[in-house]
Image (cartoon, rainbow, N blue to C red):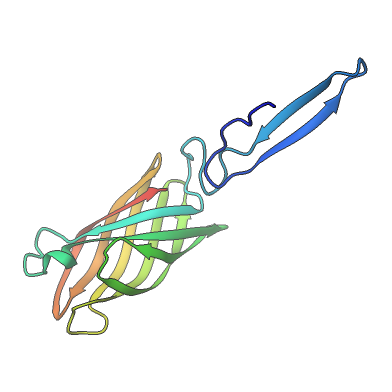
Length: 173
């Protein structure tokens, strides 16, 4: 029996049989490697997909606790026309027990602009919504990575820091 070729993660492999006139069966494997969620090569313009999002506080935010200075999430970004919306799909911090987001904006070419909020409930914090990121993200895509800044306020526990240069990185996953 012939082994199937390796498929891309979460993609399907379809086998089709074509019968030749001489009675020899030709088996063709079709793989759908490279889709809108996991392109085989980096898109030239921003497109929908699943990303890892990392926000690192501005260097001026020295009063924020370490857990509030560098946070990551899994996000889905969906582009319809030039409109982009984002949703949290998970987080990497084991202490985070709940996360909510409202991210919406636009994309044009390699440029992305999102405005909104991310709030996390973190185990052990004295406040219910322990972490908050509020503001506007302006970023540019290069290959699988979108780099930019958050112009806004980061909050952890009761400490806040407002800056125009919080670092934001989206990495396609």
